[in-house]
Every structure is written in structure tokens, then in C-alpha cells.
Length: 296
Image (cartoon, rainbow, N blue to C red; front, side):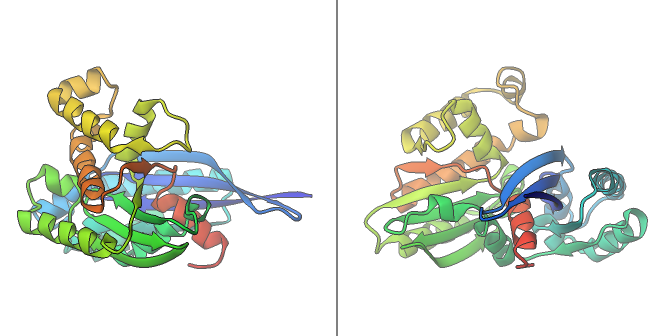
């Protein structure tokens, strides 16, 4: 007997907003299957507002309300039984965030929760990582967003430590990540990985997914440090316009992908990792799974 349930997750990031609608296939005696039914990404760069002027602009508030109305209708059409909407770094820092949340609830009937970096990292880590993580190995999980980057260290199948840093792609784009932050990240990674002989990276976020897609590799195969380094040099050699026209990148991806690549590259260098795995996971996937298993 097969039963299909529908859940939705809304991820309000610093670079874009996403609605993921997921089919959860339940079958007697088998683990539930999570299949993507629909994914809608809207490039509203809230971080540009929040990190530079400290508030979400009236124009972007209107765009958010429109997007949320559309998300609400899509969830209705798909007959979603439950949803959760989480906002991350940009909304954490915008001083008018509470007003925006109240307005969206009133106009689009969607309830948004603003979460901290620790909860964000925990939700993402609760996804399909257990399939990847071998009990005898050590992994540094790196999730690069527009406003922040979350680092989580796993060893012997357990989470050892986790930390969120205000070093995201939109902040880097606006020259808002000072050397002291890079120094902190380097120190944290080196200190926490020092006791382990070998560390492998696991990367999540739209930019590393794009780099992986460009590599043409099969899903379970890792990317090497050499490949990431050469891609970084290649992307830097192209203009913003060339990255759009020649690589087919979205306009809101073409400018931040270099900064994201730099974060992954540094994480590999400082942890001594030679490989990075790129499972197709993110905050949206984590929200759906955490909802289904009653963790949130």
C-alpha cells in the first residue's frame, strides 16, 4: 500500500527565496521517500538591503508579499498538508523584519519564523547526510548562503561541533567581510580539524550545486580541490556578462558564485580536505524532513 503526503518548505534567504513542494511516499516496511514535486526560486536579494542599509526596502517588501501570495496559491493547488517558512541571515539583521513578517501574515497568510544560524545549520544537517557520512571518517559540512556560512564537523557518525559566521556571498559582494572574519574562520577550522588525520568536505548551497553541475560528474562522485581551484581561476577570468552569456548563469548567480567558490576553497585548504561531496540538499529539504519526522 502506497500513501503520498505533501509538505512544503519556504526558505527566505539573503540572495533568493525558495518554495519546495515535496511528495513523501510512504510504503509498508520501507523508509519514506522524499521526492521533489516543485521548486520555485525567486531572486529577491534581501541581503543587499539588510547588510547595507539595515532594513528591507519598500520595493522588496512589495516583491516579497507578491511572492508569498504566489507561494500560498501554489501550495493550495498542490494540496499541501503542512508548510513551514524560515527566514535566515538577511531577515535576522533587518531592523524592520518584524513588521515585514506581520505584513506577510496579514496579506499573504503565510507565517514566517526568523531562525538563527545554529538552528539553520541543525536543520540542514538533519537532511540526508547520514547516507553520506561513513562512521569511520571525518567530514566538514559547509553551507554557503548569501548572508552567512554554516560549518559543522562530523566524526565517527556524530556531530562534533557547529558554527555560523557572517561570511556570505552577498556580504562578500559588498566588501563587508573583513579580514578578521576570515581569520576567525581559518582559526576555527584549523583548531577543530587538527585532531583528525583526514577530513572530507560536504558542500551545500546553490553555488556549489552549480559548480557540480558544470563538472558533469555523477551525483555520488566528489569534486577535487584541484578542480575547485581551477574553476575559481576560470570564473575570475570571465566578466560578469560572460558568466551569464557563456556559462548560462542567472544574473543573480553570476556575481556571487566566485565568492562562494572562494569560501569552499578556503575551507578545503584550512581543513586539508582534498575532496568535496555535493549532495542535493539545502535548508528547504531539511525543513521538509524535520517537519515529517516531527522535529519542528
